[in-house]
Length: 358
Ligand code: NAD
Image 1 (spheres, rainbow, N blue to C red):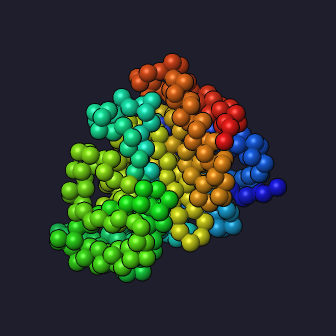
Image 2: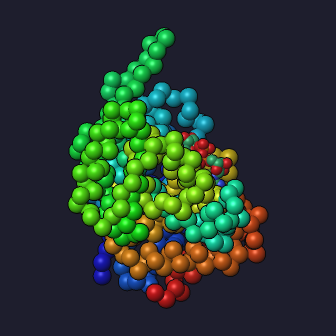
Image 3: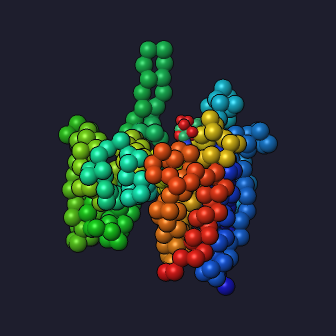
């Protein structure tokens, strides 16, 4: 029987509640599909600071590196907001991504037909949207040197090397090959030298994927096109800061931040996590939507463990739960038959996933 080691990082706020539900669903599909998941829980974020005085203890990095994948909830909260920058939960997360070398952040934005009214856009604009933002995660302006500030100035540097562009572009083109074979690379090449190099290198990589249609778009236009006609996109390839902004914009096409998963991958172990934060305003109330985390667990099965059938079962179970009218509070205003708690939603999806015929 195949057995996989999973590092579990629950984190802060709603993190523990949503991870528990994802584990429930994972265990249900693992039992059906005949593989084993061996979880090891480690700490990161505010809770790690409280216990170890460090938001990213070495043990967490070590366990993650020795695992087949990391399933992560969310970190952060007001309690830790006044700490020095390097002690804050968010610094732990940035360091974690860097240590693991997860340079590619994959954020699918799909619109569930059942929640078509949850979006602020018209149904005819968003029905059938299925796009994937591929964002470079450990380079660009968030990490470039020099950076700093004095009394009157602040500065950051946007740097990309050919190597960095090359490896993220390959991720985008490979994904496009499994999808609709279209890549739109987003940059600001009319103004930025770094974007000109980005564009040149993406063109080079494209030669290795003759079946994929490559287009380029300036980031300001892309922000507008995402709202005007999101269906025109298949894979959007972009750098760190542009991807940060565009993927949040794309996430709102679906209506709730509680629905969308992500995968951060590199050459070593990958990190699978919802796109939302620790939602301290609703933590401990049993009302958080676990779907984003359950869908992240599905991405983990698909990309890290290659358990595609199990991943399909989870995706089908989420759709079925929504089709049957089950809603957590954040989406309860859209065609709800029954409003359920975090844990009820997890159990419903786990039951459906166990019944799903492939
Ligand atoms: P947030 O994503 O935590 O919450 C934004 C809003 O969405 C809140 O109203 C929240 O209740 C709601 N929400 C989020 N997830 C939900 C879910 N699953 N179900 C239902 N509603 C949900 O963003 P924020 O409020 O800006 O940040 C809160 C904390 O999270 C901060 O400390 C921030 O630094 C941290 N954060 C962490 C991550 C991460 O761990 N990857 C990402 C973003 C923010």
